[in-house]
Length: 325
Image 1: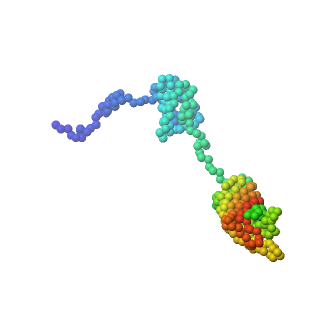
Image 2: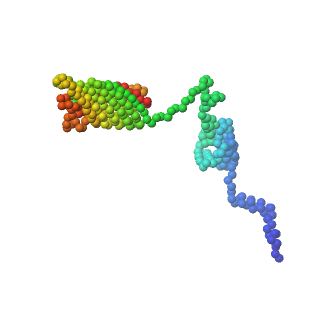
Image 3: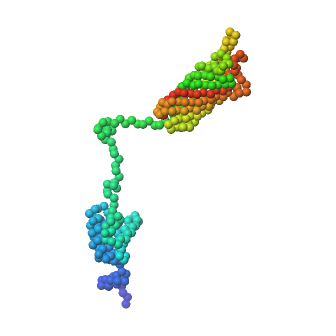
């Protein structure tokens, strides 16, 4: 005789289920906890292997921590005993793990505090940036309610201007010449490179020495150079070179007849200019030299009765300059 399908699927009697569960519980033991403590929101599970003498110490430590507050409630704390030592394991949700072993009851409170305590709320909260009070017209004011005029700072310029001048004394040859006169210059600087334009007028110029001839002479020169700033902090030192256009004029009475003329030449010039002082206004000391390649092998004269024109010259500058730095 066959048994209907629904009768074969009827659950076993209730007393059989209870008996099966009891047998499973006896065969597969589950871990047990002798006690659970709550420490200001933190659950501490005490394994049943922990001796009773530690239980009261744990409760006292939890009460102390609970009164002090600020514990990490997300921590999972297990307490177990290994021999005479108490083992404390702490696991955090982010995967961090800490383990401590202590052998004396007085170490329990400080150990739990070190493992579970969080910094104070004020220390963890980012401090807001101070905001200046604002008037109705949106003008910021200071503590004594005085309006503060806030003007935007202009962007730093990539180019700087310097102008200056002074007096230059010069020595020239082939026969010795001496001169003195004013000098002016202007330079445009970007970084450590400069474009420099200088002009000088040798108002008093002529041969020097015991056997010099009484010739009147004047020189005007315009020099364009590219400079490099070697020193920049405190003292400024610019060194450069470039072409110089020089115009020289000579005149002299020879047998009651005025002899004279002018000569234009291009020379190779170099100079060094030192700025001394703080601020926009500085003292300037300079040294420069010029060389006329065309006159090295063959001298030049404006007239056969006049002395030869110099092939080189060197000068010393003393003056002042202003810059926008």
